[in-house]
Amino acid sequence: MAGITPADHHALTLAIRWLHVAAMAVAFGGAFLVAWLSWRARDSVIETAVRYEQVFWAAAGVLVMTGIGNLGAFGASLLEPSTGWGTTLIAKLWLVAALIVVSLPRSLAVVLTASEARTRPVDLRRVYTLTTSMFAAIVALAIVLANA
Image (cartoon, rainbow, N blue to C red):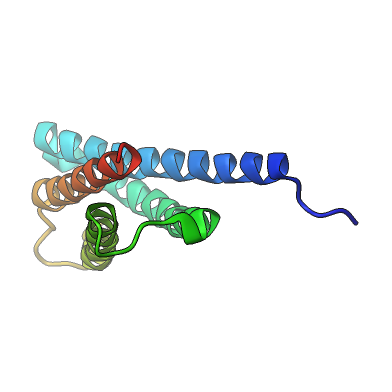
């Protein structure tokens, strides 16, 4: 069995990057859509929010796996954390971790609101505007990293 050629490696890393960008587009775009809908028609958005939560966690899994794959693909060529690029990467990773932590109670609140198990419904405007804002900051940091 032959090893992986440089062309195969390049194709694989390109596919991983595209999958990463696609998953981010789905997660960010979905958060934006739910936020926008919650500002327009507050009462009829909960079903969309529940569906988004399912899509979000699938996309989050893909983002984590492909993010790790991207780091592995670049390996030793990554700049040190003490550099500007490295500091930006660390900031992005912390913001991603914060987004995941914030998303856990958001998802739970949305599901409980949809099932009417929650006495006070979640403020969809606030939680999805926060989620969208965090995604926007992550995308901004990713753009800085890609262009450095």
